Length: 314
Image 1: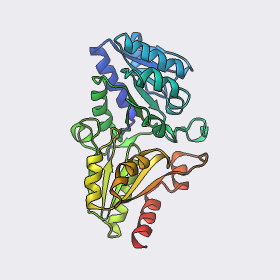
Image 2: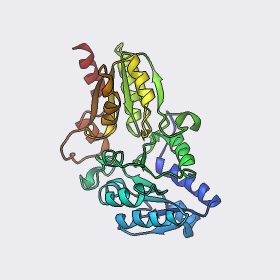
Image 3: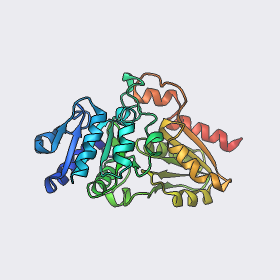
Image 4: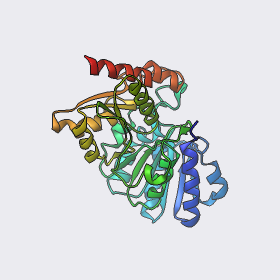
């Protein structure tokens, strides 16, 4: 069995290490330090943690003010509230002035499961990737999270990072292979050119599992990890489209405006590549565990493989 880790725990560990070296690095929370895995940070560096309370809009604006004062704030909040309730502050106070704030969207996607649509962030990529100056990332495992944090603690650019709650199996074996720079995706499996499966974050493992099922059925798939949602690795996408003109995107997000839309927008000018977007439909998501909800909407390896076979054989 591969090792696994919670991305939030990795982010906290790396943030502590960086903040010990640079007292300008601060963590802001909105009554969410437990969910954000920041309790170790609070114990190690209490003077560098700011508790805002349940006031996400204030948190973003305070983080922007701190950044203008030379601080390097990381604002942690549930992704649904950070990108919905605070979108005006993100757009105006952070992105418009290109302010060095790192927006850490915790419990992203369907992570809150039974808490329902008020707590789901299935539109956050559609919002954040449309805001100028804002980088957008979704790490898929502990190596990628660690490498991404090494970049973020020294970067001067505003960014939004979406992470989930559960432990993720290792996808990579080194930080260098997982993430090197903004706008770079990775080919993490290459069985052939029948189809390419594109994912980011928690659905990267779903894509790998789907590719394994397809291989057993004689269908050769590539698996692409687009950790950098914005900027997007359009060069990689075009190279993949040169090899196979069929792409399936898999995401824990609405089928509108997310990873699939980004890929389709990048490849639309070609006019020769079919993009099948698999994600949440345009309806309030049902209540249930993440696995139950994924299975219900066909965002699981068995259903995606069956759907892919039908498309390739008809």
